[in-house]
Length: 189
Image 1 (cartoon, helix red, strand yellow):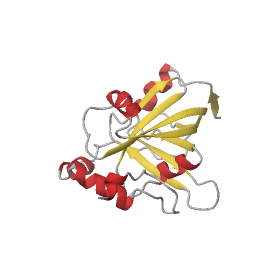
Image 2 (cartoon, helix red, strand yellow; image 1 turned 60 degrees about the vertical axis):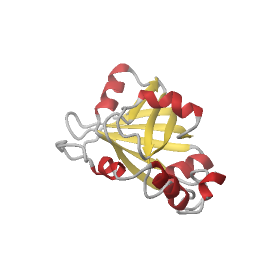
Image 3 (cartoon, one colour; image 1 turned 90 degrees about the vertical axis):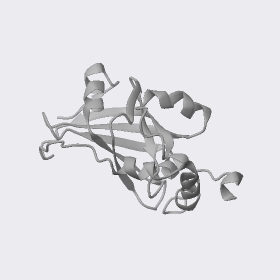
């Protein structure tokens, strides 16, 4: 039986922070493509207060979450226990994008792991209006082996100029043509 909670209490906070991955889901207001994006890497998710969470967003092949949040703000984060008691927790609410280089980004960034600075493009902040768990009885029991270091190794071979170009070329609009990362005049040179 699912339970809806008013806040993220200490026990739930500890559980959320212990999960090695979660899935982010967003969608455009009308038509278009629904997006579900897995997230991982220790130290990239934080609980800011009893109803607010955030995660560090790294450069990816698309920028659907950013585009959808800029358009309508709707977001859901789903955490699943692969070890221990079967549990699923969904954090649903309104999200906003804090772009790297903005003053708020600089305030929030120290809350995350100090590693992995190259390639970070934003912090996604979610104000949760629904916090609910469910049984997870059908989720397989799996063993966490290790984090992948592919993103870290990829970033180590790049410099900021690479990301500046990539964001303009690949992350400025969503697959449905919605604005995603802002393009500055300097980025076009």
